[in-house]
Image 1 (cartoon, helix red, strand yellow):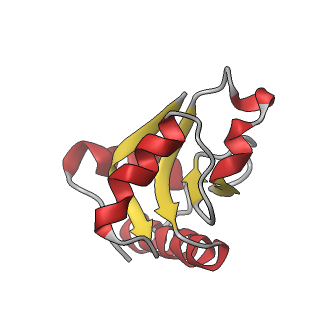
Image 2 (cartoon, helix red, strand yellow):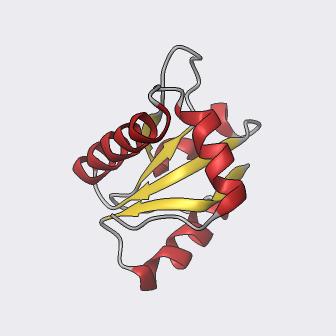
Image 3 (cartoon, rainbow, N blue to C red):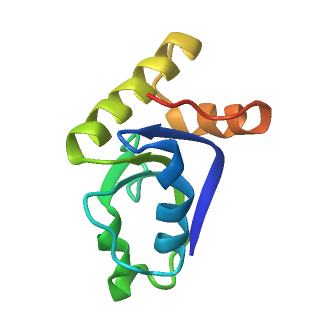
Length: 113
């Protein structure tokens, strides 16, 4: 199951296509060139980015995937993660990204990079 955070970071995807891409991902349809910035599967990592089609694999069917960002290419995903890390460090002085993003999600809408 995919959980989209309200304050979703977006890079490299036109606003008109965002909802359509999100619905396709929720319906488990393949999408071309889209990457998701997610909470890490390993607690020692800050964030992960994966090709959206990777979550179509059987391993992910029973997993809850929390999505903090949506990117239109791998390069855009890398830049988005870097921006999220820098923003977290600037705001908190620490690299604990997920607690910061959860707090941020309670307060306001996302950013478009």
